[in-house]
Image 1 (tube, one colour):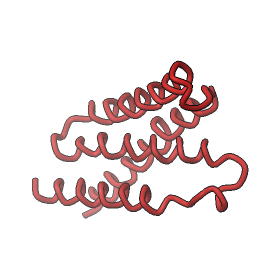
Image 2 (spheres, helix red, strand yellow):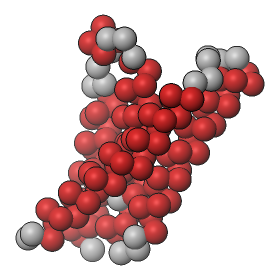
Image 3 (cartoon, rainbow, N blue to C red):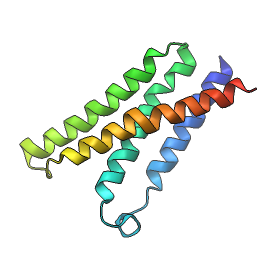
Length: 117
């Protein structure tokens, strides 16, 4: 149980580090918004999905993906209805890639690494 909490804490710190030191627009180039959607979706999905390591229930992988996608959808709907930005389908696609491809791959890699020891 202690090792699972340590893994969760490490993953949280890594996600926080990525968020704090996320490169700014000058470094990103033409589509910084899509990259931010991808990274933030992956971070949310990893944080929620890493609960799997604590409770030994793989359903948290899917809850992490769903949570991340719902946040992305809510953000785009906010842009559309409250005019806080521009609704873009490609932002939702970036959310989907971050939540459903990048995050599960990261969690699987970490789980495989843990099982080696």
